[in-house]
Length: 249
Ligand SMILES: Cc1cc2nc3c(=O)[nH]c(=O)nc-3n(C[C@H](O)[C@H](O)[C@H](O)COP(=O)(O)OP(=O)(O)OC[C@H]3O[C@@H](n4cnc5c(N)ncnc54)[C@H](O)[C@@H]3O)c2cc1C
Image 1 (spheres, helix red, strand yellow):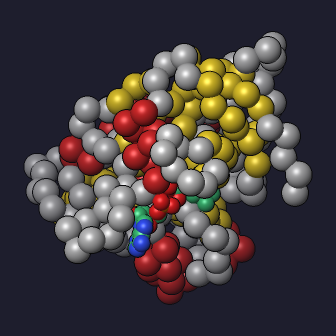
Image 2 (cartoon, helix red, strand yellow):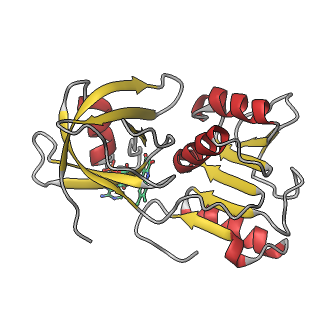
């Protein structure tokens, strides 16, 4: 596929203090309207970090609904670890060096993971930073007053790592949508926040006719897909995105 390179100026950056995900809101320079994108897709950032030898290109899902003016992405810092694994090049550059007013190169929205209205209940399932495309879908479905039931399931380490928590709680509350969360290292007294691994027996899921969208680490997605198949979900109703080279689960 050929991409057209677009220069953009960062208009604003919000660093979520409660988690390691940084949100960027980008607006195109010299363009009255940004290229449209269908529901959820991703953009790619291309840059050569100062001092680095290579030009780096990384994809990021858009984490908000289309609005014709801006793109928002949410980038998790890949810190590396004590065993000597190097920290991520692009994510750390985004966190530490990009500022409002900087100009970066973007490849326009592309990708094949987006919501398709099949006039059926929808189940959005994510873990960790896989929450980003789900957030865009949830915002869009709320904006359109989607008339079928939505189930929003998310798994992460604890409430301090839970991005968009306030916003998803508000949307699900306002629309009377099901909202369940699993924290691996935190207990909660709230009856929709569970401790441990995600459990598809909870939440009265529409196994017969629902459409299931999944995004998260590959191991999580394999588990989710196989669990749903075991529960009788048709494989045609399971849609997923891998944050890396495309892979069959
Ligand atoms: C379709 C798609 C959508 C995506 N959407 C998002 C999104 O919304 N938000 C988001 O945060 N990310 C998203 N990603 C992931 C993103 O593209 C990057 O892969 C991510 O930010 C890491 O890039 P990096 O340059 O920081 O890490 P890299 O430098 O590419 O390193 C990748 C990982 O390998 C580790 N590593 C580096 N060097 C070594 C080594 N020598 N040995 C072992 N391990 C090493 C790093 O710690 C890091 O965890 C998406 C990816 C795809 C394909």
